[in-house]
Length: 289
Image 1: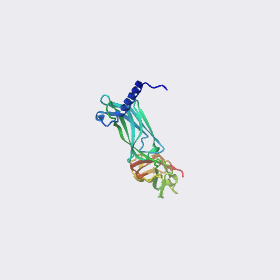
Image 2: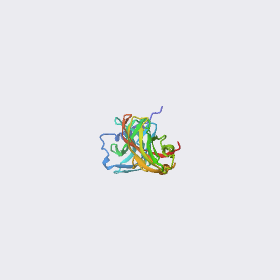
Image 3: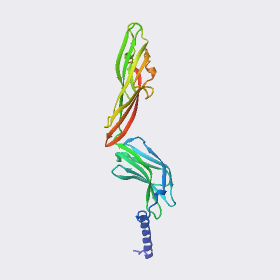
Image 4: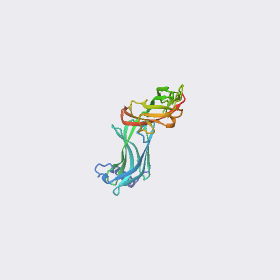
């Protein structure tokens, strides 16, 4: 076996020592820290999906573009970290080296539950200084449930019809109809229009009163109806009065809508949400039956 020359052994030892010292420099508590008050890192941050909450089966993407740094000479933005805080622990989800190009973080939400606060932090290095970090974006909040909350709404109308024929015969009918899908409420023509036994009836007086029932089938959220309106906007009244020709299709010609606003609130999977308002709109249409 050949013996390594002493001079080569000394040279290798020196290189190893320098490398160890170089790696340790940035963590040496005796080194002066980087003055982060003079450092500012900014970026355009886009979070997708940007919904109030997500299901654990989804994936979240955070894109950073137009990343800029203002700092004293010698300070280098080494990498950018995505940090999560769930209230009981703070941990790094990912750390990406920065080369001046846009960055993308993809996060499977299967590892998260409940309310999580995310932040993006820039990791700084400088020769003969201790490492430091600066906040790029903070309070990126994400609520992750085991499944997406579902919300249901059933709209209904109380219909009152009155009319009088030319011979004095009177017609009066009241009934209730409910939505059979998520989009419309059907009013039967045979309950709305009438044919007098004698004389003619050219018009009908119709009163429509709207309401709704809402619920969440897969969560424990509570809810309440905060507004109902009939007309062409949500600013309308929950009850309207119409004089219509006693001819099928007259109600359809008004193109009326029932607007329902529901507020959902409460706690599910140990997460209490702020009131969530949901608008549902039903077309009021005639049906032949």
